[in-house]
Image 1 (spheres, protein in one colour):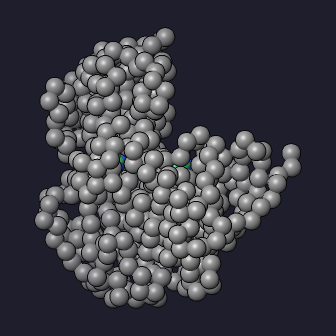
Image 2 (image 1 turned 60 degrees about the horizontal axis):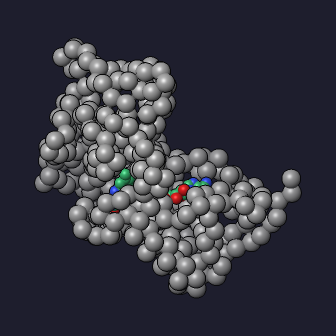
Image 3 (image 1 turned 90 degrees about the vertical axis):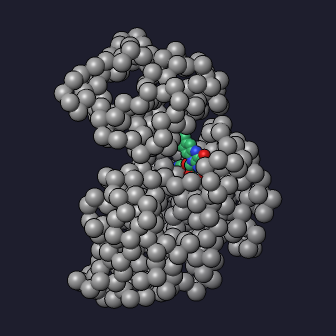
Length: 407
Ligand SMILES: Cc1cc2nc3c(=O)[nH]c(=O)nc-3n(C[C@H](O)[C@H](O)[C@H](O)COP(=O)(O)OP(=O)(O)OC[C@H]3O[C@@H](n4cnc5c(N)ncnc54)[C@H](O)[C@@H]3O)c2cc1C
């Protein structure tokens, strides 16, 4: 089948908060023809199916609800002059900045002066978590659950178990309750949950899922507790929550280097990936942050894209990788540079695999200490914490990777 060919100035893949903010900012800056492609029939990304408040404000409470926030973000991009096409999936690459798409109008090949990847992140489904047992209906991720309830008005079940203790677990609990489902328990394999326990929701800590039972419908979730006991929770619905992974398939297909920690594209403070002219923003880079952070990154990438389009960007390469020692899991951005560029809000975002009480973060390169910083609050799995970026000008651009350690 033949593909039609077109050229645009900037192509943005993904119309969530990050891609829409990038499109709005670039269109307002007069960057030429901006096109945002979204595989769903409706633009807005994850907030479209999050029917709770907390979007766009500084805190988890207040702010718009998800669908309202999504509508505002779409309206801002369109008002600024960005072209937005939905139902169009970017399926691969045909050149360094040429993508292949499929949509209602057929197959296309679009070449851009700059490409911004804003494909977001998804929760790891049951299959990727290697949970044994039968494969009955009634098994969801939070995202699938919210879409079923809020977008398609589907019936869910009567008794549910939620797996995971990241904040999104409680979005799952709220969605289940809104759908009239009794929540039997929230289950985490960690010895103590970092989250507050919601009233009426038993929290089982130190419990690992060992299997699912049921044939025509889920009938139970089997657990092994840290003390060796085994139990089965009777339920017809289970929600695997959190454990987000960047939606990096397109980046990977393009041979773009991924960071081993985040599993999103390796990137610097200008949102540049390893491929010149291809940028990345939002939860594709760090699964996951709040929608406001994704949108801030979308706005911030515009400056770098404009430099690229006008030929005033710094040459690629030259950044030193940032690496973390266990139990730290990742740092973002994960490359220094370009030049004296500093990350958003002048700080790096980090994650840990286990709880650390007031850790001392030490930054070093080739045995030379560049910075040390004591965190006042505990660092908790599944939650971001931050490292100031004031030490960046002490990095040797010819030295080894910069190492971040928690003591
Ligand atoms: C259950 C839940 C509750 C949340 N609650 C809050 C909250 O209360 N407050 C808050 O601030 N944040 C909240 N968040 C986080 C927030 O939703 C995300 O930070 C935000 O959506 C990230 O924006 P993004 O643009 O990076 O990605 P996304 O919103 O995931 O958007 C990515 C878009 O890219 C599209 N896409 C992917 N691949 C392709 C492709 N190949 N071709 C075309 N299109 C593609 C996807 O369809 C999607 O629309 C919540 C998240 C979840 C899952």
